[in-house]
Length: 238
Ligand code: ADP
Ligand code: MG
Image (tube, rainbow, N blue to C red; front, top):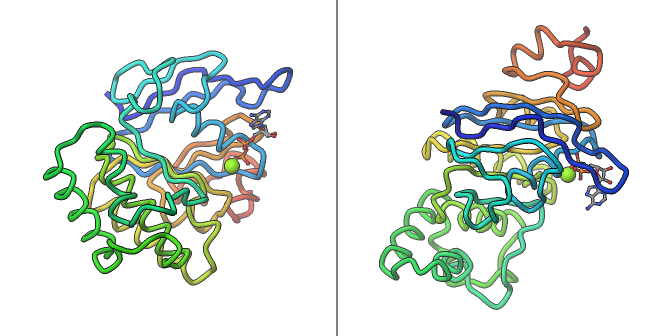
């Protein structure tokens, strides 16, 4: 049983076919990266997995459970977006604990989960600050911490580094790679950045105009690109 299973997923917005038949299996603990040019459907596919959009047709399972029509809160996922979307009036601790509080998780369990996540992300000194008192990189770490405390089966990232400057981008990327090792969690990560894809992924899914062009390890794609498009994207001659 895989962590994530997509079968013949299609999505249209009106007359426009954005996702045109995607099949994909993600194994438990795997770091999968969706890569492809702007507008190819990466975010739409991730939002379908999250339940923020319904697919037009096809089946989607998470941890062996069919998720068609299941609302986001019931999918066992947590998502980190490009924009951090933190609540400005809450402290870091408040932001990290809010969803758990709403789910009715016990206060002591919330504190324990926040302590663990803030240890992993070095957020301890920041717990009582508000978002306005944090740098962009720190805010994104809080957004990642907020995902970790949910203890999701599946982490979804949509271009989490694109609002950060170059130096922070490298640091935060290493942080995400370290988290993946430490948590052993399944992660699906969207980017249009080849370097991010090549350095983070166990498995890369190359998308083009709503279709999967190739799936493989970074080395597979580099050595044996299926076509010129993949070669051009990954950066070796076909
Ligand atoms: P990516 O994340 O790869 O840049 P998106 O998934 O955001 O691409 O978008 C894929 C295509 O779907 C684009 O052409 C975009 O304009 C279109 N699209 C995305 N969301 C909507 C929507 N809610 N309504 C209409 N078109 C949309
Ligand atoms: Mg996008």
